[in-house]
Image (cartoon, rainbow, N blue to C red):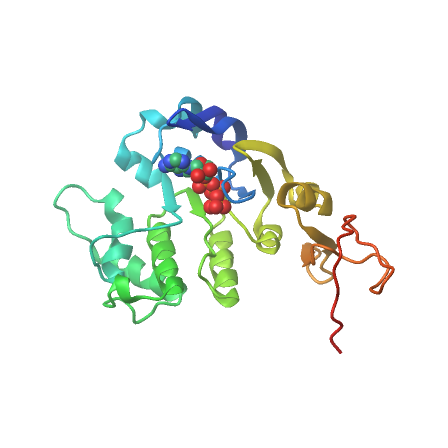
Length: 282
Ligand SMILES: Nc1ncnc2c1ncn2[C@@H]1O[C@H](COP(=O)(O)OP(=O)(O)OP(=O)(O)O)[C@@H](O)[C@H]1O
């Protein structure tokens, strides 16, 4: 069953085309990652799906319903978002921010219930922010802010989650914790991801974007290859299999990687032949 269908989506700003004829489907419950270079259109695609931007043409369907026709509050019960940047002008406490995730379930003037507050507390504990309820959001570290915002998205209790580089600012421990937490929910998730190893660990399918277009869509194994990393990102990478979890494991190499050792007479994997020297560290 399909949760989301994006059909021939185009999006332009000031006559500049940013998304060019994007089409893909997301099966219910799938975790889909979007990878691609800076400026390739990942955030813009997500913003069109979570309705911050209005598509120039095309359709987006959620559970076979036209997304553009849904009421804001109905939409907020269906889609939770962790956006990339959040310039909050006002200062709120951590608890106030996370409570906002329960707003779509409140009628006008209705206060937060005991259940809402318990959900907020439980989620703060899950993201490692126990005891932070009364802290001011503006003084938090980058990682603490990110965890507050993911807690807000998760108490929204939706069937579809959109994440824009969710592991931004997080140390490796919290990156894994956050991704494990999201994965454990088993809800349909669409996430822009820069880290190839995180993408490999958590995604069922990957979308590769370049210059506003989808250039590949497939399983992690189909998509992440050293050829793709070279042609899309311009980097040399070794792609192997982690012997423990059998997931793809990616490690990057110096741009001018040696093929036959270093010395006067060496060549480079990418054909680089400029004058240069190497320092050998013992
Ligand atoms: N509001 C805007 N006005 C003008 N150009 C924009 C606007 N928003 C995005 N763009 C341009 O659209 C292109 C795609 O941007 P987008 O933020 O979607 O890329 P991205 O793939 O998410 O990049 P990154 O990896 O750097 O986050 C970029 O060239 C960007 O400069």
